[in-house]
Image 1 (cartoon, one colour):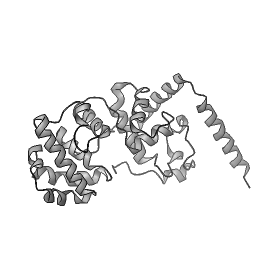
Image 2 (spheres, rainbow, N blue to C red):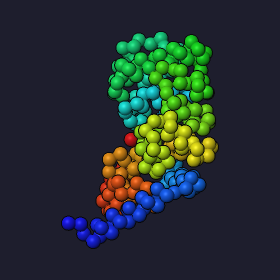
Image 3 (tube, rainbow, N blue to C red):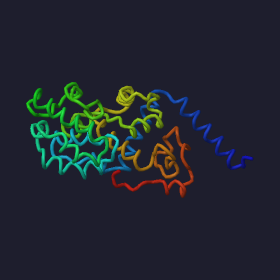
Image 4 (cartoon, helix red, strand yellow):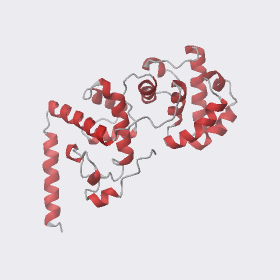
Length: 252
């Protein structure tokens, strides 16, 4: 049987959902931009957590980051780049040698094929240089819009929205989009947030998704965005319970 406190909480959540459902377009834009400002205060040092010294290194590292952690990639790439410092070197490598280096990142055969293939493409079509245009980047093996936007935003300073699993999940929870299609999510968010903020917003959203707004049991009761979030209550709202779900701010 529901307690009086439980009924009151449910009523409050229903009222909260109704308020967000009745939000105007202008209200949505203002709330989205306020969330971005709040995230900026929470994560003032948000940045790309992949280590790189050149656009090429970031491109390779981003491709390798699929289905593994940035930490694992950062432990793997020093050996890879020491042995194959240029696209020409990696394109001419023995695939078995590359596989041995990449094995800890998982899916190492497919990743070897991708990084060697994109290296050959860079040599054959772009004089060994990473192109600074999205339409060129997405023609490379293993490179989609997400990877291209990571490289454009962090290596070339070209604003881009990186829709990974964290970003997509938070964008839906914030009510910025209802789509599961990364391209549509990117378009919907781009309509809400100023272009100059796209790259840093991506980092802030990813950091928040990794640390607080988890896919399972988000730490709602420990989230500073809670007053602005239509999905508040998907996870524990009790501050003490939620605090135990917050992950360390070191990258994952």
